[in-house]
Amino acid sequence: MKSEVFRQAFSNVKPARGGDPTPARANANKKVLMDALGKHGITNDQLDTVSNYYRYRPGRGNLWKHNPASAKAMIKEGKVTGFEITNPGSGYMIPPAIAVVGHEKIRVKATLQFTKNFQTNGSLKSLTIVK
Image (cartoon, rainbow, N blue to C red; front, side, top):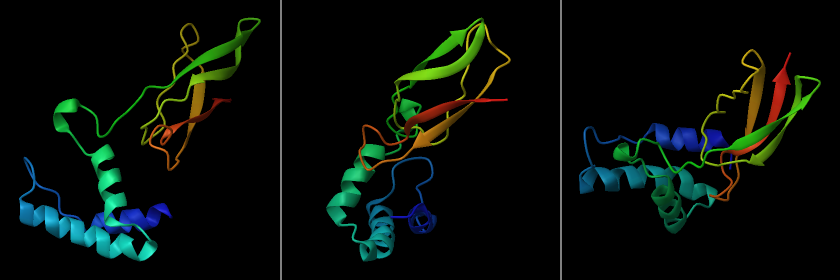
């Protein structure tokens, strides 16, 4: 399903301010989502599964579950020539900032991949040196 479909569906959701939504607000938001997503084959159970996994928890400090990525810089003759992603992480919404100790001036572009698997969704796909 295209991301635009989700953006449109969620643009009509009215979030609670300052706490949990009332049961009436939660039901109204669920109806808005099912009306928009149901016609694309999304079931109530699928929406609940995804919603429960990615539910916003303000006290947790993150928007949703997140596992940090890690990589090793490949260095030849004192210059960074590339990267080996040792753990692609997951849960990123935007590419993370990349720093290479001892090579602070290097600029790196991180590319993410989005999948249907919760453990790999929003994971690091590639790291490219920006010249």
